[in-house]
Image (cartoon, rainbow, N blue to C red):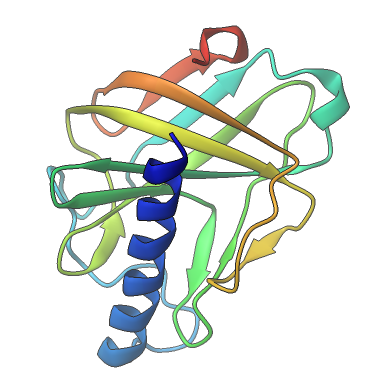
Length: 156
């Protein structure tokens, strides 16, 4: 599992470099590359039953299926590559889904892949590193039209 997190961290750094090279405009919400979906609104990954000690903190999702990288965050500022994260409230969080394959775009496809969730104190992340309060892995999450729901108790 540690090797997987290191690989995902390295892939996130590659994503940052790629987005910097592409040079998207400030405030851009996507730059194409919607693996398995259309250019519409994309889906969400919802986690329910999160312990109350994590209310008020923020969630960040990473996943991978072959060469496609998946992320869960609210929005991205391409000029700084900072990602705004959704806040956990009442034991629940919904993370808008993004995919990266040649470009970042909203994810609305039908795929199955492993998901890793980091709960952190900060509302924004960059590639300078993430210090999670806690992490949770969910194996073989089945997304339909870019969306899936899991309960915290289902983590591996």
